[in-house]
Length: 253
Image (cartoon, rainbow, N blue to C red; front, side, top):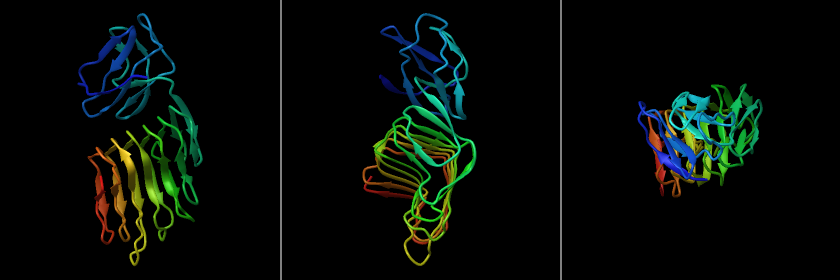
């Protein structure tokens, strides 16, 4: 698998031919992402039903392409991506899958656990109400890369919980947290430490265009912990009424 970071103009679509392999490079000016070469395309006017394009407004199907033209929206092509509809909390364990939430969900502790690389979760605006009984996380991944979490409303269910995070990514790299609404709360008399987005030893990621709200004591909106280096944080709305708290807290990163 050959990967390249790419930047594009919205008015142009560049198609490369490398070793007989057609590669797309196209993004709107407001989006940066990862392009993957298409090892299955060949000839001209080739079509594929197994590709999706990652687009700033969501995940759209790719239609038809050829060696010099492309019929469809600007985006990033990735091979072998599977769409999975989900209606309950659980493990997201299919590599290259795009999980689409079809209804709001509740969890006594942790809701979604990402256990594969290249997993996307699109909540379609539905709500994840997590840690209603015990300590847990709305969405977590430990040791996996290239996750994408978008369009989720994530709410901490139990207001007196501690050490419960909306999104918790650790020991990985190159993920995106985009266009989510996350709220946490906790005790004001003792350290609750309920973070909206917590990256621990998680590098080269993007936290973009989220609405993050925290309250309690030491409830930070975004935490970069232990070498969570090269994180791009932009266009977020952060509101915190928590005591001794920060919108963005950088610790050893």
